[in-house]
Image 1: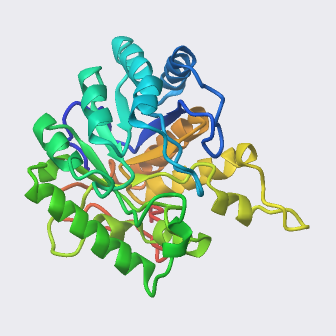
Image 2: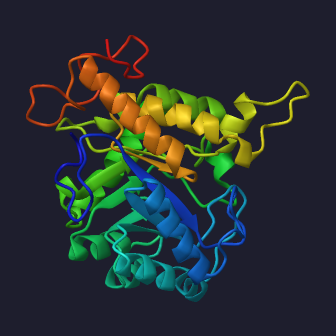
Length: 316
């Protein structure tokens, strides 16, 4: 399946689970829950025990309207947590837009870089990742959180996201990042309104296959607890479902994303999603597919046989 060659990351014949640890006071759903490094490391170990294959540690909120913290503060928040988790044998991803933070987190034991700006926020990021030779998540992004919704204008969101992701992937490869270490993320919620998020989720196979040909890239889906889910589940008076009450819906999205051959899903509450990917993998196996089809199999790996007309990836 796409993602089989990613260095230093778990290899499974199913969609992986990435657990979220925000060492921040202001992240949208769990800000302030793990404000100190020791608590964050403890939370990461809990997520790994619950079934997370990777734990993503971040020290800067990217919620809508958030303002940036200093590099020094971001480092203070994340480095002890990264080091503690890596020492405990947990596969750690560093969630940062700063090359300096990425470098120090990798030195502390992180195995990959998850950059929601796709290299746009810091011109040194691509060189940093290339030098380290680690997997790199390139997210579709149009600007910082304080004004990103002003940039949420699309004629065809899937086509435009694919094109812009393609530009960032080419820039990364030109800067020395190995193509086999690139992971793409459609950037749900980043300069996207609910209708844009749903369109991208419904057409994940197209997001994986960027313009210009070549095999599909591994896709990371980060929908967990985001506001577009709460809006869908709003009460009769129109009040959105609270973030912490949308985990069941997140599990449903995990199953659908796994059925659509997502490489990994990024979630706040792990156990239900870990169950969902295992159920989906077994369902596919029972339907005659041993798992997501990968490069060299004679198929694109995404959107191949067994996908329903909805493109959501249910086995036939």
